[in-house]
Image (tube, rainbow, N blue to C red; front, side, top):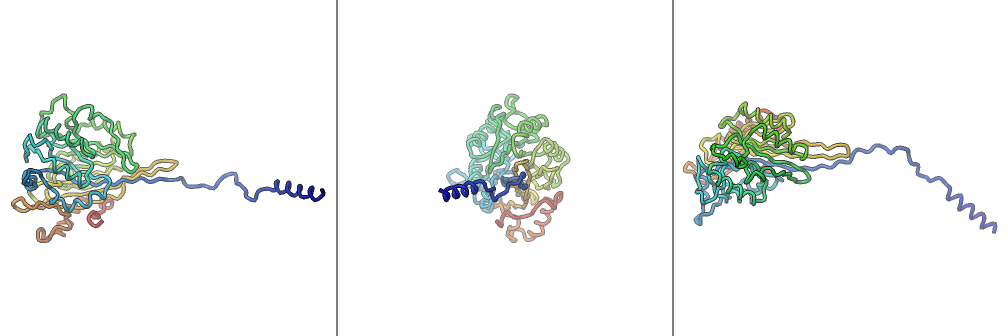
Length: 371
């Protein structure tokens, strides 16, 4: 009995012993957990399908194959989450007659092959959108709305124009808007203004206000005013500044048909002109083109969400064709055969200075074709 009592006392004593671990009143500081989301955007310029270009791609059966001219560009497009270009000429349909300058109508085969390459963001707002009138613009829009791409700048109805569109990729949300300074034709019916988004500060302000607090990034395609100058016109700077002030994060500029510098307005990336992408324009400055890319980054912590743009890269392309408008080939300019351009390296350096003139420390040259 005595042994039992002693054993019971030992057990009770063991149960009341203080635990060896002491818990402090306050835990040591731990940095906020953060999650990083990232999406890459690649951009090239104007697809202007002059008759010399699309005729060169015609097959015997009446279809068109533009892949040979794009063969050096195709491998890199799918390295990027988003790939942008400006479709300068409409796909109005064969029934309206394919045509070149000044009133363009292009084979939709080109658009299908650009999508096949990986392009998935297309601006439809430019001065040639109405070249084939209302029917051409609507036919072109009908083509694009059936494709697995994001478009902006031209619509099939006011309801479609007013639809609230938030896109998402890799956990990043964004809006895509597109405007042109004007249309070459003034015959846009008053009740069909949705056919083309003409730049107007009130319209831009209204559009930006709809999206500014709803998405992580706003991307704006802007078809500018003045052509054939490597220096942005003051009105271009004014337009870009206004759009940046409304909350745009990236402004993609085109229409000058030659390359212009990349700049920042506060935190807004502005590419004033990518130049052409495909065309048969004449003169070397119109054949030297810009390809650019940037990473959109979102960092979410328990305290705050941060947004920034990183890895701004740029490089040059060269749109080659023979004097009789044959053998169209879009080369990385650094890889143009010396038999075509004997002073290639010197010219590359000269044109590269145009790109970096405003922001030499924020732009990395190259890095597209050696990945």
